[in-house]
Amino acid sequence: MTNPLWSSIRRSRTPATFALLGFIALGFLAQFLFGDSLVYSLGFYAPLTWVEPWRLITSAFIHSGIVHVMFNGYSLWVLGNLIERVIGPARFLLVFTVSLITGCIAVLVLNPESLTVGASAGIFGLFAALFVINRGLGGNNVSLLAIIGINLAIGFIVPGIAWEAHVGGLIGGLVTTLLMKRARR
Image 1 (cartoon, rainbow, N blue to C red):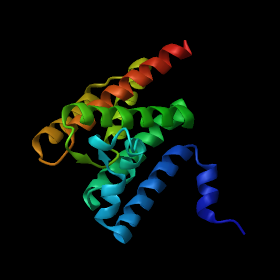
Image 2 (cartoon, one colour):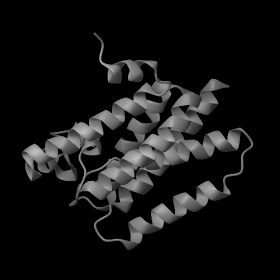
Image 3 (tube, rainbow, N blue to C red):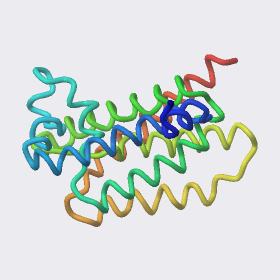
């Protein structure tokens, strides 16, 4: 007998989005079991970059609270369902992963003593990818630019938000998607 959840994920046109959401959910549930030790073990902390490079990725699956995980999860679900259908799961994961890494590199350069968690750098990279895709299709990006601007502003206004990761993820997603678009030609 097959599990209906796994069957629906296999039939999904956005399997990478569902997989990332699953890892985020597992990470958040694991935080209940292990508490802050998981944050300190998997969150991105710049001084440990060279000895524990996996933190560039694992930090995306740890969050600072229910509001943080819900915002990131919802954003990933909305953007992932749009973008992955257009560029496919492999390219989608490439944009998301590069954005996570460039977000962490921005934190490394601009705020090297902070501990950061969350998938926001990847989310901002997806915003950038959506911008490039929509522009390539001749779409109007005014409302998308407003959403990106508001979300960036929140990072600068609200304390404790790693705006550096947001900016780095946005740049990483933009560059990666532009390079993929150029390579396709």
